[in-house]
Length: 392
Image 1: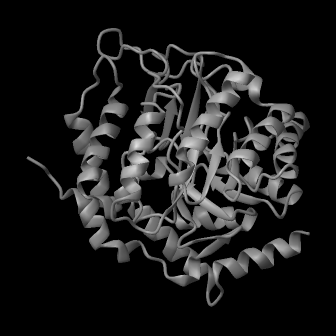
Image 2 (image 1 turned 180 degrees about the vertical axis):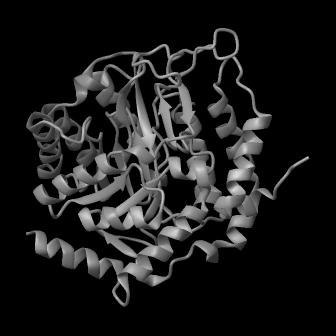
Image 3 (image 1 turned 135 degrees about the vertical axis):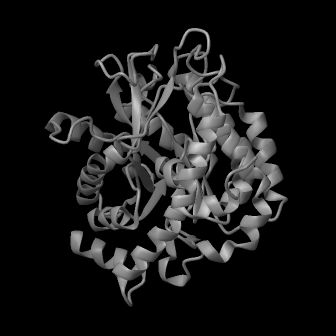
């Protein structure tokens, strides 16, 4: 017996917390998926079935013209997007297209990939846990994915179906079982060329996952130049974005700050138009925490509420250095007040994931309402242009 109406729960944060407890009470880990992964898959199944209800109630998430934002030649109806990781395989584009201004599915891989090993049921080893007290998720999944062919089929289906006004910013990774730069670039080329007919906004390249070791080799200005050259060649006319991890510490070293700015500079000066900052902070799983003691890997990525100050500091530094660069603030945003802080620091758009898993889609409406109240008679586009002019 279902305790709460699923659709109503997706809109009301208080009901959603009840629904979330219900899902966790009914969902157990398997020997393939940790409990949090089982819950996420069940939530997506329910979401797929509610596409018509979201279409019928699209007005609930429509912020009106005041929050519309223009990025290059594209106009988004809302500045709020759903972040990469929520919809890795483009399974729930339909219902979410009525909620957000843009969708960030992925990370899309060329080949199917099981992700990092775990045996939750038999051995107790896991690759993802939820920290309810801190409202955070600690994740060492390692890019589990169903592969490019599956994604292209879903994108094609979405393009031919009724849909909301959200545009697609596809997140992709070139990680394969062959760990060379050439293999990564070849995989990225295949991903972006095959999905390009169905992607109406842009592409976001991703080398930031802390639980895939080869990504560290790729995080250089030299490889960044190769990546943006590839995107310029094969997806001209689309917005090109790069995902940047947040600072490891709030009192970061000058070396860490300059390292990130050098990569962004290489991306920006060679045609990159946006950066996503920065939704997953590396954490040591062997630090003695009871939550991470069963992780097989020594490093995982933390997302959620604790990331907010790290994200805000990086947004501020990047905006100061590159005032014309579009910044998508992603990390620790749980409310309209959090979103407004990101705009004060230099954000152009914002995206959510962990907040949705704790409070549901009602967070989006809260953000819309708070932003409109903060703006008064001003449009968000006018606020951004005025703010950026003062930064030059």
